[in-house]
Length: 134
Image (cartoon, rainbow, N blue to C red; front, side, top):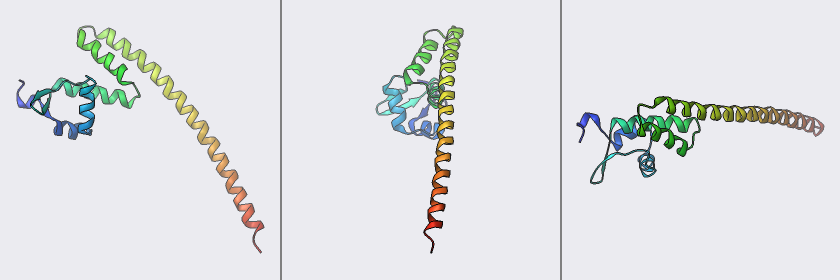
């Protein structure tokens, strides 16, 4: 077993990464994290911490858990083959960026339309209030 300084408890992980114990157990269940089990205790290694950091970053960018798993598995299979992992990561990032930019454009258009509708509604309310004054 690694020295104590090399591992973190579930509570320490939650505090360090601002996640819940449920989140950590979920990632463990999905075989994305592999903490050392001591009875009911879970001890997370540096490897687990690095993986969690990558998982959280991937989720923030909108990658699916399956995409994240594949990327992590590529590294686990052969850490010396970083080029393949980086190429795959880059390709997924390009796809995700394009999707995010499309979503942003759609959202900007919806915001513009909503503002126009709200301005029209405000004008109608103002006109109605003026016409209803004695």
